[in-house]
Image (cartoon, rainbow, N blue to C red; front, side):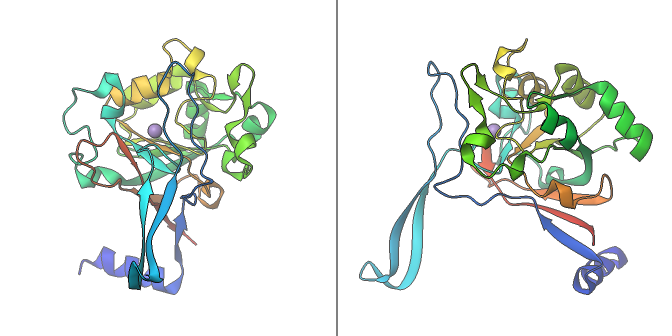
Length: 259
Ligand code: MN
């Protein structure tokens, strides 16, 4: 075994490295993004029992799942957006697995999001983060820590008002900066989607999806436990199900970090 992998195993066993689960539970109570009624929407999660040590299956328990690809903690592939539809290796079954693993850069805007539900990350804020923590490396997952995942009440999590949902996200210029000036894998957020709640009213609508997926980058939505990660120094593994022609998938997102 390589020395580095031997050390990884030893440090995991010794507890000097920890595995942080960045994944929300997936079940019937999982909140699903709402869209204006002119658009088709995604169903909630349905889990139907096939058998549970009973007549339909006396020795075994299993269920049937029904859910949208973009449900709960999930992955957005470039083909999810029209801007990424013609890119090579742009879907769940064709993205090289190497691109699911990368260093994490955690940008903590939790105080800003607490003060303003519509807070947007700007390029200036990213540059300030880099001045403190170093340049965002090639192949990084950029994770926006808002502490939004601590809103355990689905209504507070979706935070829908008369004028639509209110939740933090990325200014268009920040998405452009990350997609063009830094060669990242993608962005991850604690909110229901990788665009801000009000992003349907932006120009273009949903600019983070538009820009990131147009640049072949990925998205991770509904993450949690970002407060357990250092600003730099963790490695994130985010591998979607290998759905044929899949636009995204629920997934288990794991980070390996110093304990
Ligand atoms: Mn999605």
